[in-house]
Image 1: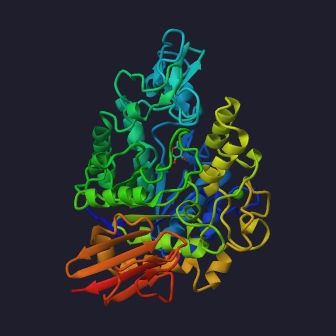
Image 2 (image 1 turned 90 degrees about the horizontal axis):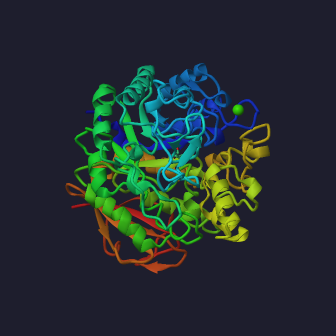
Length: 552
Ligand code: GLC
Ligand code: CA
């Protein structure tokens, strides 16, 4: 088994917001191709491409109506092939998003399925009769309301864990599995390099589709009935046998509700299922009474506890993926660091050190390498994301939250924070488009943009470049055992990595305070990277991060 994904750094592109080549305000494949040199300079190995398939865009491409066509807004299959070839020429691999827990309701399978109860595609989806004149159970959808949609053609309900335009596929049907495997094979034969599997932990539902815990009359989070279900490992092992194991590709499963115990199965080093999973414990850390919606700050000790346990419990058995943000999360520097201009660069670099020196495969979300910040939207009309818009409607209309509070929460947590256009330069629309962007550009683009970062040798961009280069140079960074230190410190995240006679000591100050830190006192070693040029004995300066290599 080849394991190039272990020493790779992956860069996620959200195509809609990356680069628009034809002035229609929407990023596209040719826009990506035009910027491959930029990514080559950064030094990343792999691009994870968010969905580019044909889609009515109810959820920006995560609702696919044809898996073997390119979304018209993004270009053509020829554009795709050219992008793939140009990426490969630069030694960059392309990992596709695989969204197969559900399709679009405009996919031909679903168009057929809803026609009649005896249609050959009926059983491709999950249909149920009403129960006591209401939905078949009390499951709530991720994007609000019931997870069931009534369809009067056959007087039955279909299941959709996300929007009503994203009906869930019935993975218990072997024909569904075979269709998916054939489609994956088709893409592998085209020469792509892997899959990021959308909510793959949700494909096997609990038999009987039982009610979940919820207050009387309310919908409940259905994760306990759909995440890590009874057949999920069996189906992934079948996928592995029939498709994955036949190609030199990598896989990462987006695994809502995954525990460390479950991750040992999904991402076991024996290679029977996937190479790694995205877990949600650290990004879900501030969730509470209003689901994900909050303006709570991330507390450091619990954050360390979570990430440290993932590091130590998977050691030697499974492989971690490492991420601070993606297209579903607020911007890393705004959430985990400090986007105040005085600390933005320092804290963005500190976060990069903290993540890239851990054991696992690091992911960079487009613009993270520039320290791009949350959108700063003030009005609900600025938002485009279905989840944000539905949540605003649900919470504000029901009176559970007032409009100002909900707007404050959106400003912290909304997925649109990550979806504002990539900031290429200080010209109009940040150089993203010559037209009108589909979502507003962040107002800070004259200060934060790629052109500026490339020219400044001290920029966040060049800092990431250095981190990526270090991973290529030191096996210790890839394979070293992770050992937490200073676990009870409320301001410092520190750990060691150990391999043979080599040791890496990493310490990161997560605050704007000057804090005492003895881990480097009287230690002589080689400094691999730091966001400060001068250190102070026994002290970490605001957001200071240091990495010291010692050999015994
Ligand atoms: C995943 C995607 C997210 C999407 C959802 C439904 O969580 O990352 O963007 O909305 O699945 O497909
Ligand atoms: Ca375009």
